Length: 464
Length: 102
Image 1 (cartoon, rainbow over the protein chains, first blue to last red):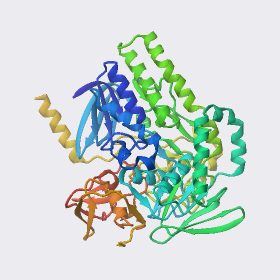
Image 2: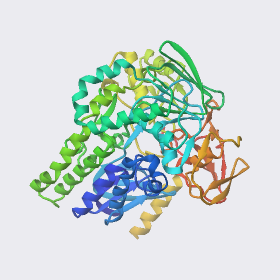
Image 3: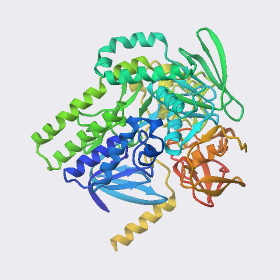
């Protein structure tokens, strides 16, 4: 088995920046990524798409090409299309590329697995034609595919960004149904100081709103009672706003009310997570280098808590520095000196975060869905069923598996975990931390017995 | 299958022949399969095993497992596959992925 100083999971901004820093300091590095081309979701397919549609996607997106170039120009073992399905202590990382399983070992692991869309269970959200806003953006970035008649539902900067990109591409959204209310902006004002320190972001936000207004995209603020209608696919979104009930016909619905850390790999390693009230999600407990309570495992980027792409880059660099120091490639003082500018940049990036989190909170109706709404998409378990389990004495998500199949389908709770925790916590009058989260065990992604058997034969051949 | 798609394709490039449920489609070579199917007007990728409800691509990043299709007898995520010539794609019989972590 090949042994590395550092194995990085995920070739987004955090992973790519960490790989470059670590390689420059003389570490042997492998970076495993599920996608066939580096960039992560934020810079998905940047090497190809920036040229084709850089004008639509903007300068921030094109920046990703500096990171992919950094990956290519160094002696970094980049394994694209590698689906990691187990990380075991020691560390042994098991993955498959195109149906062939293999393993790497490493003294240090950096999880740069990024974010997932916050699940947004609303009536009708499982219908074909309903996608996450992130999915809409991936369709555009990677494939140049645009929704002709889409409605954007939810809240947050990403929703505005995708609206702008659709406008620039000539297919503006039919409407924006926004869930944040005027009270949220008022509450966010106490974080205005931070927002002003991060004034370029504030300015960018105001420009985006101006561009949406000029394109005459109808915006409905403080929307409630949202449901997606349709028989075999999405046909309309019904909602109330400013006291009026409305229904907007569409073919495509893009949902978004924030992103949350993708914690599957971290949880499978037993890393301690805690509930973050401001971001309304679980995040791993880390020190200032991104080091977890499992020795040798670091986490950087949105998987550590949502701070955005540029912050991810700096955090990736910090983790790589600390790992290099631990392995004796740089001295303690050298590490501190190199870390200082990264820390300053990271703080600058984080300045507007509290304002954004308060101004665009998650949608209440999707955090505590109506009884009839499906929360577990895979096994089609409703919010009402989860509340019934609580009524029968169920205290936590793992216990819930004795009552029903929520979280036991193919996605392994990625899109229902937070909702199940929230529903049980509310029904039992307990906190999210007390309620806990689904226990995550390998395989993190499906792997066939054939893949396992072939891997065993390889290992035996190597031993003989 | 509807031919008028709710999605607009903007990339030009060579196309290859694939079959989806015995319907011939010409999809962009090397494109993301889920994106290409959506753009070709395929609205329903599969039906759930529990209630038979229709599903299609949802997250486009390999996390939700809603875009499952069957190719050569293997159920796979369409959003994690590239289009290649001669793909024979069908809706999975029962959309059970090949392992069940439960």
